[in-house]
Length: 522
Image 1: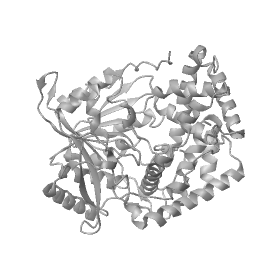
Image 2: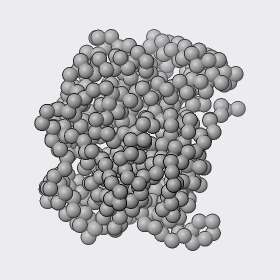
Image 3: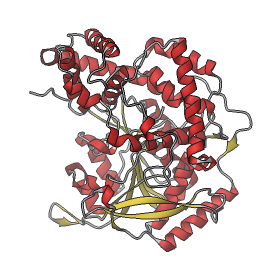
Image 4: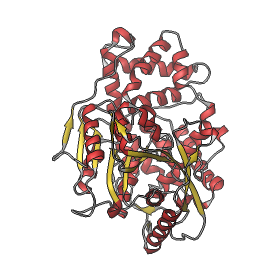
């Protein structure tokens, strides 16, 4: 999402599919009390504003970045009940570009996805050349959604208990391994409620959308200009459904499929299938550069090299900390971002030639980030489990993913283990909102998508385009980088700038050639 580190992912990011009948009696997310509570909270936030000042020392940010907080209700049905504070960051519009003065257009609020990712560092993106025109006209605003970072943080387990490596990652797990993972999923779901309390039920995508409206009001914006990436596109779409008249401009980049029947179980199956395709793209690219890496002249030979490394790591972890699970995690990131390809291939090549150090550097655990990782996974789990019904029977998960793993083994089972706590979630689930807007109801929105994006498959962008009346779709062809706005593709960026700066959209679905493939180091 890239400007490299901007588009954070939490765990496997969203998604996996094939059945999930709504649980009987599942509740809905909207009602008169919540609508009234949101209006009350927004009115109060508009009156209070946000007192921006120096960011805390622990955030270690440049002086241009200012920080503040906005207060929101924990439960929008009870706006006078418990409140939580969300941290907010801002860099003011520069007002100049290319030696010319540029009129300010307000605040551009950004969310990088997750669930569980923070946008607190987003405003610094204005220093990147591709973003300077936008930064000249907009205050760039980031924030940590509820549960994330210092915004009423959630926790589901002691961060010190996070797997530090080495771990396994079986493509075809045994029945004993499955039983072990079921037990861990049950314990994790219980731990979420034990450590964060039953209030964790209020951490959801719909409440993220409501928080966004309170933030809009606190910033003094009559209408919201918003850019959401990955999961941020989903609650951005919920915002459009709940508050269509409050939208000024909205960019949805790398789009989650908003179809209620897909949220979230089926979306995750679709994601696992898409990662298989992207894993094949990486192997084809690596084979093209066999002279550099020596991993194989065909995609199949590269796959065999990977499996050799995986087997060797299972027998003897690299550096004592990198096993098959860590290898899988490192190469999963290459499925998100092709700029990881050269270094991942180099590390695999070096390891198979007897030098494990590059692989340990890239795939090894980072103890200093354990608390942030644990928090991100806790928010991811709470939001996705609260959002929608999930299959409760292990038989359903086992059947669907066993079938899928026959054709998409790369990510299928790891995605199951990431999401399985939702099968045992001890709190009520809700029915997802049916996002659908009609002509004249919503300002025209811009949708950006890469055809081969694995984390949010392209079908989601097509579905969002159908559901948001008046939206425009820009596609980066034959590319799979996750998050394309403000990245290396000048064609995509031209559409982004035209929309945010001039309100101009392509007259019909637009197509951009792919950005250049990465090149191996010389």
